[in-house]
Length: 169
Image 1 (cartoon, rainbow, N blue to C red):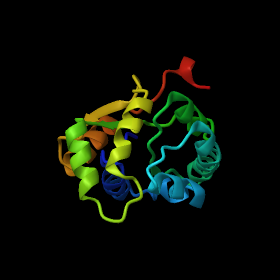
Image 2 (image 1 turned 135 degrees about the vertical axis):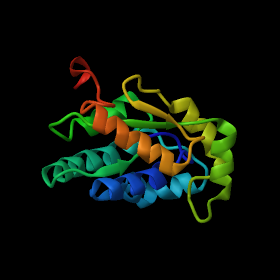
Image 3 (image 1 turned 90 degrees about the vertical axis):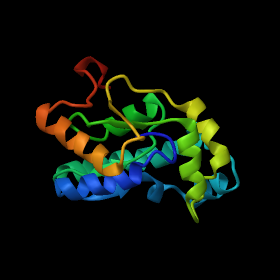
């Protein structure tokens, strides 16, 4: 999880490959209306995200039943993460990819054909509620190093990056 440009897709794809799990990108589940809105530089509202998050939560339950998956999703607010968590029975493992605004802007500016424009980064940063329970990793590391850190955390602690039991909704 994290704002646009943090490397969710790149890290998620590599992690899924290493773990032998399917990979899904939450961006692929946005409605045409949401994509159109973002492509014109208009940030999504909570109402815009409601059906998208509900779909992802339902799909997470299906993926869990099939043996698990890796999902790259911004999940910027705690309420969004709670909605996603409510779709599964087991606690989800959260990895928060975080980094300096300048690096995020540089990465976003280098993407071709993506609907998320760099001028929308500040709205994402303003919306972001940093999870205290997530495995927080700096995007200044390479994607390979980030994946290795996640794999090591998973190996050392089965509960890495999960919400404490009292926080599960």
